[in-house]
Length: 591
Image 1 (cartoon, one colour):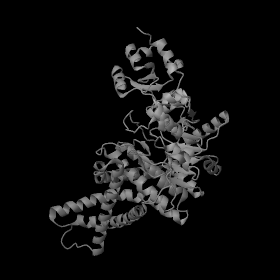
Image 2 (cartoon, one colour; image 1 turned 60 degrees about the vertical axis):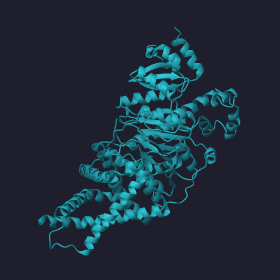
Image 3 (cartoon, rainbow, N blue to C red; image 1 turned 135 degrees about the vertical axis):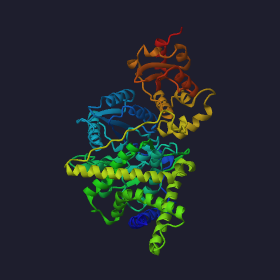
């Protein structure tokens, strides 16, 4: 049969390539399993407490993120167990909704600073980050401050409460510290987003730790990456003062390579679980095919194509292997769907006729052996990926890994074709490759279950209370009195520190000055009797949100009652008890 002949002609080079790539992956798997028990220098709580508390600047570049940035800042600034940091948020002058959202957030949080890029957007992520860096330096001059560590994050990130403490600890010995990044869990049948879950679980649990053990350079994940300020200044000196390359689509990968190439030390903090939750930056990735292809085409164009164009293969021999692994997708992504189609053809033909080929079309032993070897390697690799996914998302989720591998082959092939077309078009027209931004979403409040630390633990981690003082006070706390209130009464803790700790523990912003923002009309949105009983004061309505001040952390039942009384999204804000009492006396008079 003529079709068999052409299938065989196509299968031979495909099988050889898949065998080569499979053996490459097998090498990484073997290193992972043979060295997986290596001890990582995890810091103790005492060591974290003794860390120098460097001042950290978090840079967040934005373009059309008005729907998510407010929630991102409110959540993260209220849960981070670290005090010595500021957040610089970059916006474009032609993106007014995002500018308004960030200005609103800066009114709620004193540590949020707005940076308006000089050029209309979007330019590139690297260009926006450079504008943020300049805004940070301006802040330093105005406030006689100095930031020691630069941390990058995106508008959709859920920052782990311990991230900054870990970065601060490891920054003593390493000039780049990478915290793991993992997609948030979704249903296993949501194949596009679940594919990210599979890939990132394997990448963060296996690939990057092995890369680190073998001395390879560590590409930044783009978020959760802490850079030494001195190192970034050193890199910028050779790049016309630009800390981040504005022409590079994957400036995170580029900076990771540059840091290593200049001899600076890097470390990836491996994934571990605390209270059954991973210590990692979490986020939602694209759930639609078009958005996934758009994002992945940028990764392919930036890492493989621009990386090849910029650096070629001119690196020390030890790093050539990692360039090969980072770029082999240019071929593998194009071949994989073809291999899948031919494998299905081969299988269906065998089931239908009882043989794979026409009689007389016997296969050489070496070719048949190659086919079987590629099949075994593929099945083994899917098993490894399933094991990694199960560690984070459970075995029920991981059971669908084989299906998602096939779907992933189609997405990656489409993204590679799009990247090649985009790159070739830009070169033919002699223009730069443009930034293809991804649309982001942010989880609603309570969508990500987190084990809340106890108030005493938060106070100790924030260095506002010693462990000895906590243990000394606990046995003497009167019945019905909370530990925080008791410590304030003893003058071992300031009221300001208590409310900052409550804010961090419960994910509710804390800031005074409600009177300057209050709208008398907004105070009447909730029934006065309910507001008095729940000890809350609605004070402002903006963009479908009802902002509510309270001096206490509301219970779940109370939040449920408030939600039922208003169609608006409830946004809580902690204030000091005296401020709340004054406002309640004025705006919630007794009937």
